[in-house]
Length: 226
Ligand SMILES: Nc1ncnc2c1ncn2[C@@H]1O[C@H](COP(=O)(O)OP(=O)(O)O)[C@@H](O)[C@H]1O
Ligand SMILES: [Mg+2]
Image 1: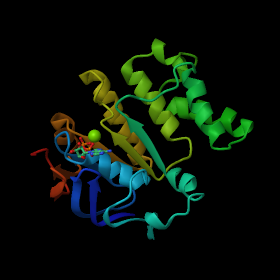
Image 2 (image 1 turned 120 degrees about the horizontal axis):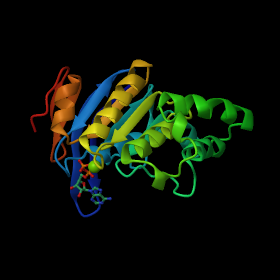
Image 3 (image 1 turned 180 degrees about the horizontal axis):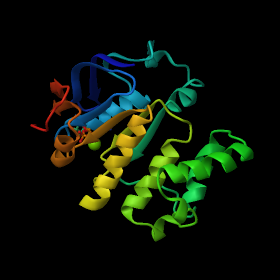
């Protein structure tokens, strides 16, 4: 369970990125966070990852105010949350397989676990045949699927996606959205920040709309109206 309780975030220079935001997300929900550029979507995701801190209010995850996490608890907390971004953030000198394996290694997983899990993850993201390709040898959609695979290595409860289709053509966009739906069906909470009207309307899932840092709408079967 994720709870934002009267959260505001003011950046230095008096930029109010979020104003008095209050909502919660239940386990296994699929939620789209929508709004124009500058609405506060990325700030919201950064607060959840504890990369930013609220100026006021609390972000409570599984009953704990994440402000109270000690610095050595933060990496463990962050493993609950897989994240993907518009620009993929893959390591260019590593193959699809190695990008995923490296994330497991960095998380302290054994060689045996890596050898067992990486092929399964590649299978889930339908990239078994591209395991040995480097990022420069893959399409944007394939790169984003590697990034999704990497985000899943710690079997996160939550997958957050910040404009994951911003660099993709329509065909690859739908591949990624279908994959996010599949991951959600397998039991992971998905939080999708996007300003793509078509995706949000086609999903027919919960939509939380932001405008200039304000939560203006929260609907169970929402449409993109900002
Ligand atoms: N590090 C920062 N310092 C100052 N202002 C910021 C910073 N990050 C974001 N902002 C401002 O906060 C507002 C919300 O930004 P952001 O959360 O990135 O919105 P979105 O992801 O919806 O485009 C914008 O006005 C942006 O300029
Ligand atoms: Mg953003």
